[in-house]
Each structure stands twice: as structure tokens, then as C-alpha cells.
Image (spheres, rainbow, N blue to C red):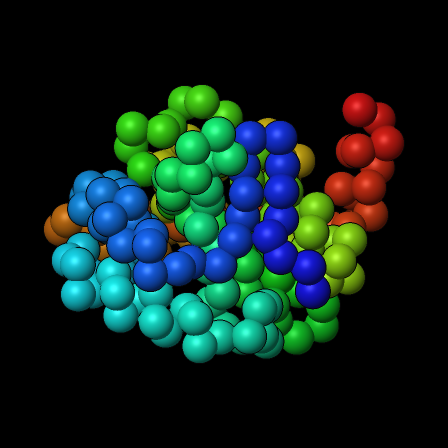
Length: 183
């Protein structure tokens, strides 16, 4: 499997020890910390996370394999994208972007590149993503990616003492191919 995955402005690659400062900057914000509970927002926690990610084979079945979202212009890590391979050629993806880098199309570019990789290189049949109903930026991104809302689970997630609905979006390889042919 070929890594990194390169798009116009981004490089999606494995994390390295040199990413500790940039990643800590991202996960220290509450909105990112809530989306990445596996990363403790401390230098030690980020180092442990990077070590654990380094031990994984790329896109190993049922393992949460994360890629650093690196800006090509300056090498700064501004977030991460995730793809978990499941049985039956299914994948689950997600993303977390540092607050200072939002609204610039980076999440769309990274998620689209990873989705294309999942379908074309990993030969996935289906990719899905989840978010809570309060994360409008995330579910809007899923819709811009061509994903369709397939489930709306009421009061499925408890966050900060309140219940939120969970939204599940998905797309199939043939739908993605048709979308790209139209563009």
C-alpha cells in the first residue's frame, strides 16, 4: 500500500516523533479532544499515541489507523484522518482538524483523498462515517463528500452532561465513481 497519500495541498502520512508539538496543539482544544479521546492532550499522551500508531501495519483490519494531515507548503501537521478497515470490504472514516485550520477546505480535501484511496487502492465496497447532531461542520462535510445519511440515532451520545443524536452517513464505491464521472 502506497503512503503517503498526496493531494493538491496536503500529504496524508504516518505520524512521526517530530509531530508531537503540532499534534498536541490540535488535540489541546476541547472540540478536537472530544473527537479524539484516544489521544491524551499532554506531551506524554501524544508521544504514546504516536508510538502506538507506529506499531500498526497500514490499514490493518479492525485497527484505527490514523494519518497525519500535513500541509505540503510548510510540513505543519494540522489534524488527522482515520480509516478503519472492516469485514466485507467496509471502511469507517473520520477526521479531526485543528481549530486554526478550519474553514479552508482542508478537511474536505483530506477526507476526499482518503475516500478515493479506500475505494481505489484498498478496494473497499462501502465507507461510512459518524458524527453527533451537534457537529454540523462534520455532517455537512459528509454530505459534500457525497455521503448519504443512513441513520439518525436519538440520544445516542452523552457529551458534557447532555444527550446528542448520532448520525451515520455512508457511500458505496459505485456511487463515488458515478459522482467523479459527473465532475
